[in-house]
Length: 242
Image (cartoon, rainbow, N blue to C red; front, top):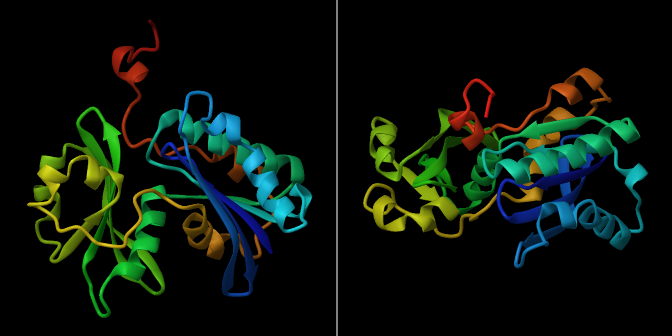
């Protein structure tokens, strides 16, 4: 089963093509681009990035048998662009689509950087702007990761309270780097962990649900970004009236 996976939760666009064979997942090719100038955002690069990856393998969009997408939390605009593109391709080609947490995908990739035998909680952090970080808390379990605490947007100083009772924990991600002066005394950094979500980790996380799945319009239409917090418009105009 050929799967196209993507994450657009940050200015970094990450795409991957994976092959699912029974319980095995093979990453065929990946592409990661960071926006470097105005006009080069996700909208300008999609779906061309997917076409480039497929072309390098001699494949075309109809050859894709499943789609995996990171649902955030992260950039509201980036998430909408990535999800709308993947939902459109899935619907047009009658393929299944699965959405997963972008923070969980980071944790899945970061698990490889843990020392052997470590049971430390993986704290994935993305920069939420406005003095906050998006935080996800996970442990390695059965070859994947399991949620320890709900994902949330919070000030970096609030991490201390969230970590109480969890035991050993390590942090990583662009959110850690953005607030390292505040976070480092509370949470050691995990070296070798990703700074942003990758498309191949999104695909690997989605693989168990995609294997053997078929197109489901109801599930496709219900798939929405996981914003965690309200948008600025919702905060300013809670009743929907400007």
